[in-house]
Amino acid sequence: MNTAPTAPEPFGARLRRAMDTRGPLCVGIDPHAELLADWGLSDDVAGLERFTRTVVEALADRVAVLKPQSAFFERHGSRGIAVLEHAVADARAAGALVLMDAKRGDIGSTMGAYASAYLTEGSPLFSDALTVSPYLGFGSLRPALDAARESGAGVFVLALTSNPEGAEVQRATVADDGSGGPVLLAQRVLDRIARENADATPLGSVGAVVGATLGDTGADLAINGPLLAPGLGAQGATAADLPKVFGDRVRDVLPSVSRGVLRSGPEPRALRAAAEQSVQELASALG
Image (cartoon, rainbow, N blue to C red; front, side):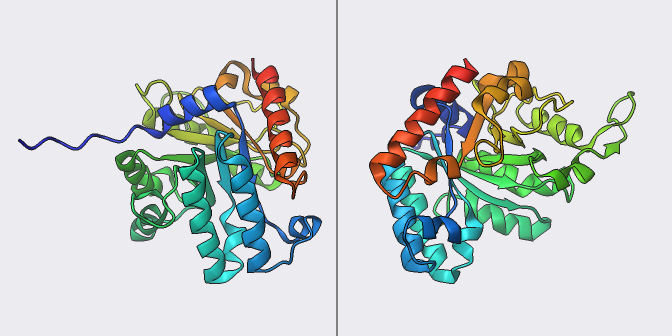
């Protein structure tokens, strides 16, 4: 008797469980040249591999999410991408969810190819989630959204980012979908995300990127999905700022810390201690 294949567990459910059991922390893997030098490593593939392996081995069995920034691997060419492939596989095997920070955004078959690379089971770079840009139109993300749903992965859509330049686009006003007046373009994006997550439990698999440095966003963040919050540490935000930015959606926030943890290396014990301290601070601030 043939039986239908079991649908993969959605990313939103897996993320909720990981945040509840391991703590609300995403640690970025950002091997930029200055940080490699701080660790006493060479700015080449050997240094990249040593750095990345150390972070994964130290943290993948204890933090909820690891977020490799693809650009820092791409700049080393094919050998750098090979390091990234191994890091993704090793981190997932150790129990961490992997969020690929690649901010992909394109149209048609090209967006489909990105979805195949990062969100399709069996791909060497298959990740639990991917950051994407909606500013070629939210509909252009459909190949990624569909691929993620089929594989049980997620996407995080840029909405209100922490970089100052983002405001000229994200805070531009556009006509409301309904009968109301103009709304922020970012709000339009958030509203589309909320539609994708309708009826999902315990958490939708389409998240939004909302900077922790923004203060009062002036936006409705009720998307029934995770809110990735970069900007803690080096960019100036603290755990105490999160309730001010996210209000009653604070339980759905996934704070992202990179240099605040990575600067503690290269000793694995120090990396683990820094991550544990961040989890404690965040858990206290988020309730």
